[in-house]
Amino acid sequence: MTSTLALTHLLNFLAPACGVGLLMGVAEVLAHRRQGGGPSWMRQLAAAWAQHTAVGGAVLMLGLALLERDGKMLTYTALVLSLGLLAAWRTRR
Image 1 (cartoon, rainbow, N blue to C red):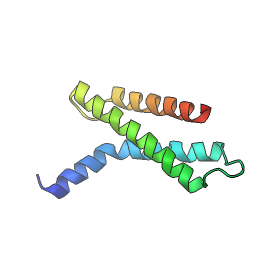
Image 2 (image 1 turned 180 degrees about the horizontal axis):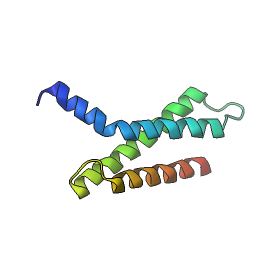
Image 3 (image 1 turned 90 degrees about the vertical axis):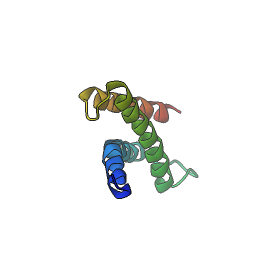
């Protein structure tokens, strides 16, 4: 397997975490507009996206390690639940 092909596989594996992380970040920024002197919306979006993508990627890797197969619905269910819990935790802080 070439390095380009390996990178393509890795990016396709992490695409659900990146996509859901971006959507959750946008929803979080829109729901909690800054009050006064807080960080800009772009900085808030970048922080939210990075945290959601990191947690989502970890959940996908854990699902691959435990189930020994990519693309199981149980893994995607765990992805959505973990990102929902992270969003709830981030909005409560």
